[in-house]
Length: 311
Ligand code: AHZ
Image 1 (tube, helix red, strand yellow):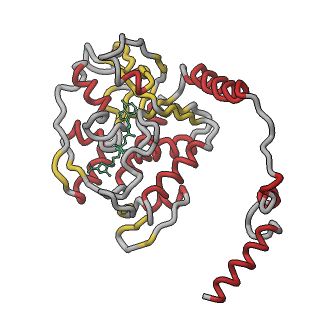
Image 2 (image 1 turned 90 degrees about the horizontal axis):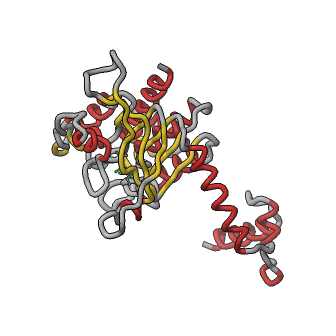
Image 3 (image 1 turned 120 degrees about the vertical axis):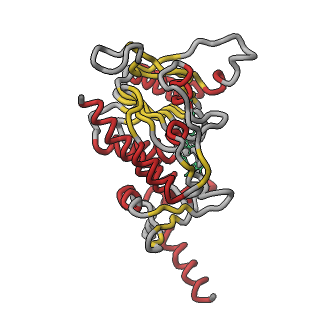
């Protein structure tokens, strides 16, 4: 204990001297709190700093290369892969929640650790998420470590913009061109968006018309059916592009994860579906708290998106 206490004291001195892994500017601040003051600012400067950037982003992303709907574990993995492989593409992520991450802030129930079956450890290595190797599977000590690391890597990319608290309310469609598919079929040409609070209040406020984002490729990863989930596939049924949804089946970890990765694909021209949203189309099992399929379905969705984009 004594040894530990004296190490802490030594560390504190080292920090003040800026020699303990902290940057010199931060170390210089420490111990000077009595004379401390922030640089001056006017409130309007803060407003303009935010509004100028947000509206410039809305302007730039009104025409984009790829839209990803949903920033859960699958959507984030798709964004990481796409953003890394194709820095030339403009990638627009739209997430209904204020907090991106979907169900991946906990490993399962209220438990922290996140399990991934091999070979999904390749994705963790790529992104730089540490894990315990347990043989056939690996364990990240906290799901939030996975989500925050992938999120940080994605948000740092110049070619990715995340619009959170923004819901996709509809899909933009065009009639399929000849030879593209069956008569009456559509291709997806973008998404219709609104701020989530607006979307949630269409019934008790007068309808506020939405905004649009044009894109030749959309990846939908909105999770299984729920208050917000399975958005695009449900819309495909209501616009008669899919006959019906098979509905997600009961839990079978072994089958579910393989099926989700294998079935990640373009469902109608221009729309790729990944993650648990897929289980609703195909009647695939759920896997419960194992996340390898979400990461690798995201990787496959990104690969598919590049293929479709390059056609
Ligand atoms: O907020 C949703 C979440 O963050 C978002 N989303 C849904 N509808 C949207 C819409 N517009 C914009 N209309 C929307 N965003 O999509 C995200 C979905 O994340 P998720 O974690 O629910 O789905 P996922 O497929 O990435 O991961 C599924 C994780 C699961 S569920 C499960 C089981 O039930 O057995 N097992 C696993 C591993």
